[in-house]
Amino acid sequence: MSDTPRPAGRIREVFSAFLLLGLTSFGGPIAHLGYFRTEFVERRRWFSEQAYADLVALCQFLPGPASSQVGFAIGLMRAGPWGAAAAWTAFTLPSAIVLVLFALGAAVLDGPISQGIIHGLKVTAVAIVAHAVWGMARSLCPDPRRAGIALAAVFTVVLVSGPLGQVAAIVIGALAGMALCRAHAEADVHDLPLPVSARAGHLAGLVFVALLIGLPLLAWASPSAALAVMDAFYRAGALVFGGGHVVLPLLEAEVVQSGWVGADEFLTGYGAAQAVPGPLFTFAAYLGAVIAPLGGSLFGAALALVMIFLPGLLLLVAVLPHWNRFRSWDSAQALMRGANAAVVGILGAALYQPVWTSAILGPREFALALTGFLLLSVWKLPAWAVVVILASGGILITL
Image 1: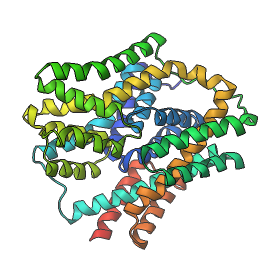
Image 2: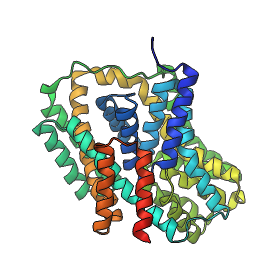
Image 3: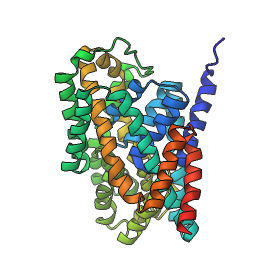
C-alpha cells in the first residue's frame, strides 16, 4: 500500500511545507535554497540531490527571483499547477503581509529584543548556507575536476561582482563540464515529473514577450496609473538576473526617480525587507502600498507583488517542458555536472560575502552559527527549529 498523498492532500502538503518556510526562511535567496534543500531533499526526500541541483542551476540561468522559481517548480512537480500556486502563495504571503502592515504604519521592528531576533536570524543564515555548501559539495563535487570548477566559480564571482559574475560562473562551469566531465556519464538520470505541456510552455513564453512589449506601449498611450505601475514592476522583474538585492536599483529608478515614492520611504521599506523571511521581491508589496499614483492601498500592494514575480514564473513555465529532453543528452549531462559544481562555488562565495560578513561580528556569533550548523548536520533538526533556537540566542547576545 502506498502512503503517497492523494492530489488534494498533496496540495495541502505543499502549502503547509512552504508556509512554514515562508515564516522562517531568513537570509535571502542563497539561504532559501539551503532551506529548500534541507526540507525537500534531506527531510522529505521529494527529490534527489542531483535533480534539485539541476533545478537550481536552471533557475539561476533565468531572470527573476531564483529561490521563488525553485519553490514554484517544486510545488509544480509535487502537486501540479495548483501545487505550484500553493507553493508560491505560502512562501510569499507571510513577508508580503508583514511589509504591507509596516507600510500602513504597523512598525514592530524597534527595540533591543527585536534587534536581537534580527541579529540571531542573520546568524541562522550562516548555519543554513554552510550546511547547504557542505552537503552539496560532497554530492556534486566528488572528484578533482568538479572541485576545480567550483573553485573557479568562487574566483569568478569574487572578481566579477553582481549578477554578471554569477551568470558568468555558471556559463564557465557548464563549458568546463562539457570539456572535462564527459567521462562521468550517469545512467540513473531520471525524468523529473514536470506536468507542463509544450503548448502551455509556448503560451507562457508568448505571454511573457507580449507583456514585456505591450505594457510599455499601453502605459504610454493611457493615463492609467495602474498600467504604469504594472509596466514598472513587470519590467523590473523581467530584466534582472540573480533576483533579491539586484532588483533594488531597478525599483529605485522606477519608483523614486519618478516621484512615486520618497527616497526615505524607499530606504525604510528596504530596511524592513531585510528583517522579514521569504523572498526579497516582496519589497514590491511595501512599495505598492505606499506608491503615490495609487493613493497607498492594498490593491497597489497586490498589483506590484504579482507583477514583479510574474515574468520569472512565466519564463520558468516556458522552459520546463523542454527540460527533461535536454537533461537526457550525454552532452547536457556533462554540461549540468559542470554547472552544478559552479553553483556549489557560488554558494560557497556567498557564504562569506554577504552572509558571513554581515552576521559574524565576533566569537559569540561564531559559536552560535557553529551550534546551528551542528544542529542541522549532526542532530538533523528541521530548519524552523534551528531558526527559533538561534533567534533566541541572538536575543541573549544583544542583551
